[in-house]
Image 1 (cartoon, rainbow, N blue to C red):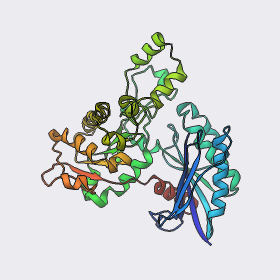
Image 2: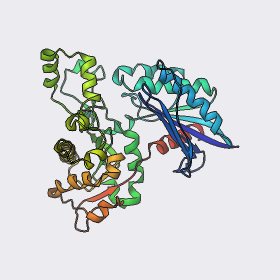
Image 3: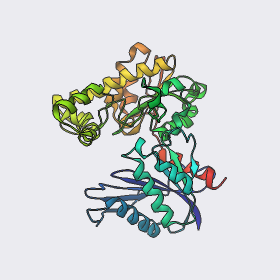
Image 4: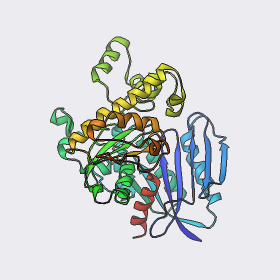
Length: 394
């Protein structure tokens, strides 16, 4: 029986998991990978092995109430039935918020789990589910070390000024500051950049993580210097169903003149806006790009416009731009989005090769481009597995 590491990303409506062989180095390809989605509605499990062969593709017979806990229990039982030949010796968890306290992954114990609970007000839509996953796996696998890997940790290298809001100091002291997210994705891209850029990897790089959740990060020395998300994962870019940055006066107006309370505003900001809200059609970029409706075109154009605006800001924060990297589901697969963004950035010296872009090639910049433009698949699960291996098998 061979040793393996399990990674878990427990969100509000989905649970993603992967099983990696414990080796040096950790292989990029997991032995199995899958997710349970539709939690809260119609939960469904889909999993495949490292060869892409389907292991399961089933609806889960879970009661309507308490589905999240029931889904975790189901996953544990499912894993026990599919881990033949593997002994899980460590579990790595994606945890959205480490606040100012955690700049590195940590081996979990009762004390720091209790501390992570105190961060729930900083990420009320995500942190409780991350912690549910930790507790469920600790109960199911007593004695197996558990590791927390934080989505905020990569951004702790930002200058102090970049983390501040222009709020009274007493509010800042309560933890209201810019934290940034998608850190595990950015950390992975930073790790592989030298393979593609050589010494330029340590230069001025902007990484665009574009998906249903979207953000960007400005790096120098492969460290985070500025990012578009702030106190929550709703700031910055327009996203699948999230507004991105919004004049706070809009919220005051909706409260005063439309009677919207915090719950209604939260639903508006996170679930009804973004690509879905502007198009009135879908949050799926593929559907919008295929649609002839002017509202769909406007949603895509606004998405690209906001990216261009933020790249200008991020380039200013790091004093220029040597490379632009696209990653995430949209960043990796939506050639028209990359084309639209890069065309608007020609003033920065960016030019792309249309054929390379259409083929989703790794390097899509033209020979004349002063800025390298790359398309790099991210691998957050591998990043979690690597950190877990470092802590459970030093």
